[in-house]
Length: 151
Image 1 (cartoon, one colour):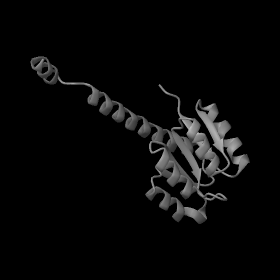
Image 2 (cartoon, helix red, strand yellow):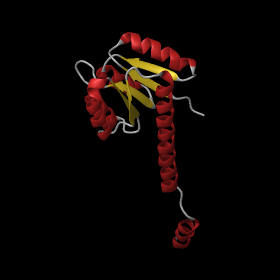
Image 3 (tube, rainbow, N blue to C red):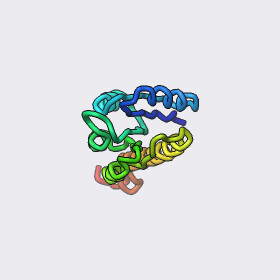
């Protein structure tokens, strides 16, 4: 089974270090980004499955980052991370394609539960895509016989 690749995006470096260590202990690959711009650069280089994205960040906020992630990497599952003052913003994020949202400070068990659910959803989507692609390239016996008759 594929190992989940998760990226934490937050402008609080201490939060990133602590949370990434806790997630790595559970056997998942973790990437961190201090800004939306850095997150997009990492997504361009790595096949990240789930992004935990802080709403409130300087320069490019979480919702703007989310819109760019969904435009460029539509299969990436995004979970918004928000403080009390930005709940409406997190809800707006869900309307823009976020899978779910968490309130800060989020418990590691809650983060992992939502991340694993999002990862399972991503895997189902990828399986549907693979099945559709295989179906496109597979021909029915009737099509094969028809081609033989025409030759």
